[in-house]
Image 1 (tube, rainbow, N blue to C red):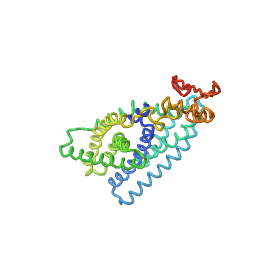
Image 2 (tube, one colour):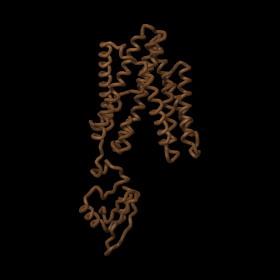
Image 3 (cartoon, rainbow, N blue to C red):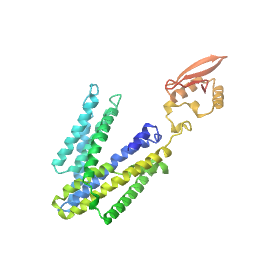
Image 4 (cartoon, one colour):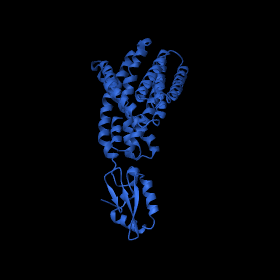
Length: 353
């Protein structure tokens, strides 16, 4: 995810909105992971019937998602966008509402559905906030970025690493861990490439999307230790549960840095945009029709269409509304003059000075 944000800031991969597709896919992936984790853990750590427990878990997650969507829809209109501290108020509203939902579900005995409710709450509430003010949710995103990277991440990984002890793992445990990690990563890589095939991405872009979805560091670190609490009434499963937690920590230690390095190397090379090669891989509001052909062709186009300046002005204006066409009549041949306000380049008579 951090690599995709950096690529988006550099304008790399924005032709097919790949840096925007990854966060949306990660949200859906997190929801699916929570659903599967909640169902499997509830079925494993219980003495009730398997089918009844499964239906109960799925129903709790669906109900939590509905509750989160309803609360998020109500929060779309609060606070008002004309207040002085609107963004800070929304930061507090999101934080307090999510904490209240998760804590309430935890008291009721449904910890994982509470996370789903908080996720849906954040997704729905920000739909209106993106459009009701000039800054959208950029300030809110920046605030939560700082909270995440400077507070939550060090606290989360330090607590998880504190419980990890290499001495408690035998050679067979390491072998089991790496086999499970290899199988899981291969399955996620192949399934992500198959799903991205429907999005009209080429094979290299599918590989980038699959790599971004392969590690699940924060989800593993947040959910795996909670299994230890579930073994209170199941002492016979305590050792196996500890092994699962250790495997999750090893997976984070292995997959996260490796995938990050691969994305840093392959991402800019595969998704690099070469400016000036095609109209379809550039921002159309910052380009002109004159950039797509050479200077001689520009002169021929202007000469042949000198009697139809209205059409030329309309075409250029549709490509870039920032251009102001000025007709200068010289020897009865009107020649368009285009002044580019967003840059220092000046286009005169179809040629760049």
